[in-house]
Image (cartoon, rainbow, N blue to C red; front, side):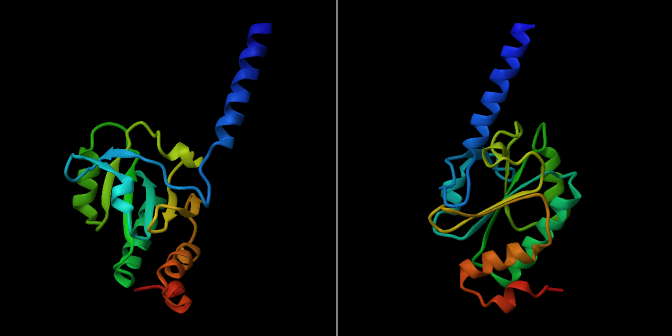
Length: 173
């Protein structure tokens, strides 16, 4: 019994310490390298976001809320072509499923693949979608767990891009 209590106490302490270390607004985006779904080559996220306001979206191909977020981001790109979007699939297994998804929906983003769900945990994401927005230097200025209407996300992104707020909240048909 004493061993079980000790294990539970260590687990709780470890979980608490891990939670305290989650990245937050104001932190720099971490140095993450993942395979690119389209090319198969390893890509450093920091290289992809350097010099650009960027949205990093953690998603799964079977996630309806992720699809909504991707459609919102695609519409934002039509209004703000300087925006950079990187989708990180956390689907298990090979990237073939994600490649078929890309072929079907033709999202104009870079897609990376994290099959072990290791990187979303850096932000405390337990499910998808999870969204992180960074400035051109890689500093995090917005984190969102789960899907919400795109209005808040658009407002934050368009503000950082210097686009008037009226454009940030109006829907593109």
